[in-house]
Length: 346
Image (tube, rainbow, N blue to C red):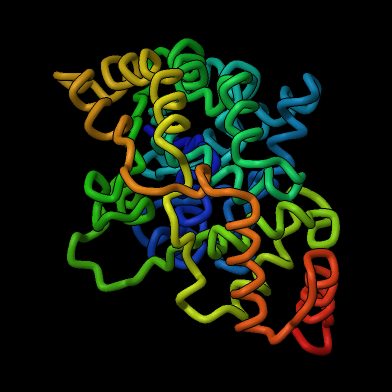
């Protein structure tokens, strides 16, 4: 029987790395009978044709008519596949409460289905989400934290339960996004274990990551977000800044959360994490696992405990040192934007 693997990739949990690895290794995957769905639910033969199916999936979830057409197309591809084929559909917006029932209900009776998801400790996920999205809206890390707790995001438990309810015959494979628990410490290698990828394979899967910069520079960008970002998904300035910085400033250089912030996140998600470990990770000691892997709070001075003046002094010093841009806050921000966003320079 044909196998279907759904990678319901939670954002910030290696989804881009996994998809990029499938693009890079598409010929080798096809040689193993693994076919990866494109954005139009075709099964391309060349890496150049393989693109994430993000927006068609979004449209199918938002429109009942589009959802019906999507499932019909998917069922047709499953029926046309060779019995020994493995079909893979990977997208981070499959980690959506609407996706299981609207797009895939009943498919676990037509093929062997596996749903794969990775979950990152929320104590790491929330600062990373602030860095990638919320600072571009001008939200402080504290405001971002409060918003995520208020809406219970990331909603790992609710979404994984929705998959189990919609597809009772499917295998649910939940993996912790923790280097020591993933094959070779990377999500791409870990995911490829599903295809019996050789453990000694020399191919390197390049890890895609969001650009990281010094905590003071992140704060500076947050304070001047209107100058640097057109939207919360605009990463052009951040990428250019990262490329222009010396290695010493291409990392946060400080613990992001205060102990109080870390405790609030840990305590908010504690019971959900216990349930995840028991129901989906099948860990024999859920409480011990969660406290050891999802509840660790680091020591030392954190970005969240520093004063505004202290952080901006550091940002100004770095920018003056690296770019030789004197001036006060707004002037400095304008000069930095002109330096990095000028296409002739960049």
